[in-house]
Amino acid sequence: MQKHPATAFSVKDRPQLLPIERETVQDRVYAELRRALICGLFEPSQVLTIRGLADQMMTSTMPVREALGRLISEKAVEAMPNRSVRVPPVTLERLDDLLRTRILIEGEAVALATLRMTQRELMLVRDVLAEWDEVRSLSQRGDFDREATLNQKFHFQIYRCSGSSVLIPMIESLWLQSGPCTRYAAYAFSQAVASDETRDVAYYHRAMVDALDRRDPVGARGALVADISRPFTFLRERLLAEPAQSEGEQ
Amino acid sequence: MQKHPATAFSVKDRPQLLPIERETVQDRVYAELRRALICGLFEPSQVLTIRGLADQMMTSTMPVREALGRLISEKAVEAMPNRSVRVPPVTLERLDDLLRTRILIEGEAVALATLRMTQRELMLVRDVLAEWDEVRSLSQRGDFDREATLNQKFHFQIYRCSGSSVLIPMIESLWLQSGPCTRYAAYAFSQAVASDETRDVAYYHRAMVDALDRRDPVGARGALVADISRPFTFLRERLLAEPAQSEGEQ
DNA sequence: TCAAGACAAGTGTGATCACAGATCAAAATA
DNA sequence: TATTTTGATCTGTGATCACACTTGTCTTGA
Image (cartoon, rainbow over all chains, first blue to last red; front, side, top):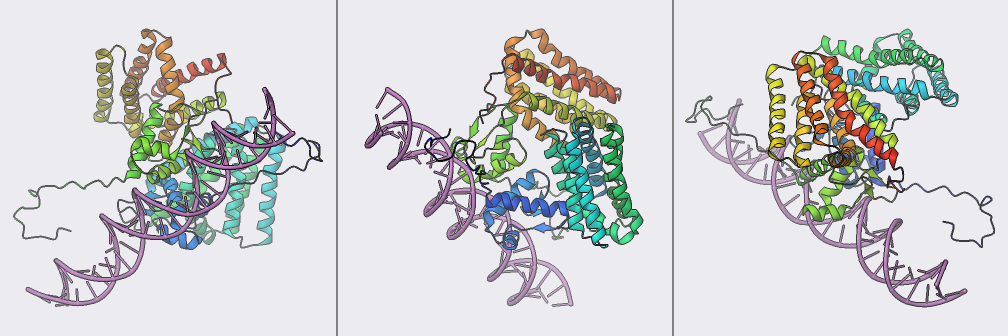
């Protein structure tokens, strides 16, 4: 498809121009809302208004409204009968439901990844853990956003090796839905427990990498289940302790 | 919250007013596009334009564009780099990927439903099968849309008994994604095989109901797997036979 | 003092328009 | 005749506006 045969460069020497990415405003708004949801920047049951979000992001209402529509169809936020949207409240049933489904799907993705992962890909996963260790050692009181991002990077680096373009969007949707919950858990976690508890996070991750290394699907899935179950069971107990939480006043 | 104590009716005798549903145009467009996608009214690799769809549905572009945005985020249609959208092409990898995931998730839903289903709910499922038999006996050359709708009704009647509000949207998303493929399969199916093959559909469905009746999760899951695997394996062979199909000319 | 109605501000929805990029066909040039 | 260029048309994107509905507050009345 090269149209100019009379250039000074041959095909191989020609400077490679990267295709410019054409990201629309709507895409950026959508990505930012996703990030905020996964990192737990919004409270459960919090009401989101189109104009409010548009003002915060310094855009007009149109991209926000379309991004919200996409998030509604993913069940990342829910549309109230008043036509207003809110981030879903966290209930006991929803918590159990989310955890069970995450174990099912992410467990399958990890098992698939175990069989297909190359040494090079495994090294990338190790790099993420190394970076995480560095962050943790630098700041004793680690910032949650950074660690949450690394945690996400770690998991999806593995999931991507499953090679399933159907499973991965589903896992993203699950993270989106459990984001507001687990953030709440992570926050309470950091206040409640000592540092030896947080060492468990690294422990499970290392167990997972080891299982991946020796191509052990069952071991990898087990480590994953233990890893993602922890915040859920923690939050579950907290919710059982005080049932009069603001679970959603519909 | 009853504010008028001086009415002529007591609380129990007062005529019950049903809450009026407030369905927006966008919701109707979205539902219609979903239906069309699941029923396979669009070809794989077919490009969809906002204005074209708006004209067909006799609305303006705005509801269509927002509905398309929602479908994009569900991977029901895909956004090309040209900013145009098309229904995803069917490839061998995608076919296997979809089937594996559907077996995983719908199998789990059926297993859950087996344990939670009541006799009343099981009777509703039987009713669907009876209606299906009636349709099939009335018109030898059954119309596919009607049968596809009944098939969907049958499956989701069961899935709903799983009680999982996380699994069900995922299954809907999977049906949305495999709709264009299986329709293709169903069409080719009806032309290729004799009527004794189509009897298998009813056979698996009855096996599933029987397993549900005796609360046998393994049996129910097995019948389900056999049921949903059939069109996929059929289409798989067809795709292997002629690889030069118009699979997507990106 | 309290409740009911009225007013005002806020919000989602859908239509319309301007603009930029894509696509395709006709015309002009080598 | 083949290739390139030009032009028109189509299409998605985002802004702005009008309209309907919701919500909160204030006033008025008993």
